[in-house]
Amino acid sequence: MSADTTPGPGRFITLEGGEGAGKSTQARLLAERLRSLGHECVVTREPGGSPVAEALREVILSGVAAPLGPSAETVLFTAARIVHMAQTIMPALKRGAFVVCDRFTDSTRVYQGALGKVDAGLIDAMERIAVGAHRPALTLVLDLPAQTGLARAAARRADGAADRFEAEGLAYHEGLREGFLAIAKAEPGRCLIVDAAKGPEEVAASIWSAVQDRLGPIS
Ligand code: TYD
Image 1 (cartoon, rainbow, N blue to C red):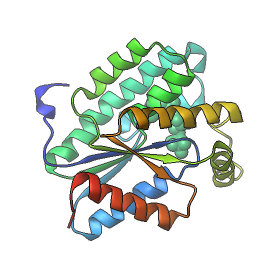
Image 2 (image 1 turned 180 degrees about the vertical axis):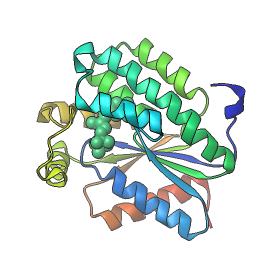
Image 3 (image 1 turned 90 degrees about the horizontal axis):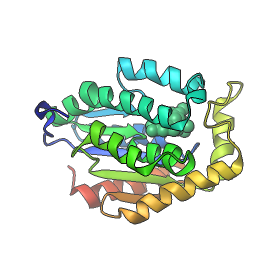
């Protein structure tokens, strides 16, 4: 990234995990908590989070790019991430806002890297290009059994069709869980595993105490 993306005092928090882990609900609850204390908080998501990145999201999740293979999908996720960083995340951090992002680079490492078998060198290079030194201050890995997550995702969908990744089988989703847990264990300074099988209020309380613990008291 160019020099105009120097991080400001804001804090960058990401939520990661498999399908149906409750990331978007928890992103909303965390933001409400931060705002109630008078802090600006930008809630965003990947793929997406800025107009160009949302257009790329449509392309990726519709599955039309799937025949290109996981390496090309990695490039598309990275293109979306570059523009998301430049247009949404870095400006917010520079203003001193909190940024809470639903999925980020760990999703690429797990979906495209661990499960898609994309070369680790390519994944690392893409991460360097999109994120550089501006890695999240805290990554919350919302963990729950794959079967529970899939059932939740199906209930949420109601009549809507499963997207390209939701449509994979149980073994795939178990692999996702293992992938996120492996990252959390390898990077304990950045990541924290949160038991997401509990109710939303209980999960939100664990997240709030983790945020205070890791980022210092927030008042
Ligand atoms: P979304 O509907 O946001 O899923 P969820 O509610 O589970 O977060 O769709 C995002 C999908 O894209 C999800 O299946 C994970 C996948 N994904 C990747 O494969 N790689 C990535 O880098 C990112 C950010 C997401």
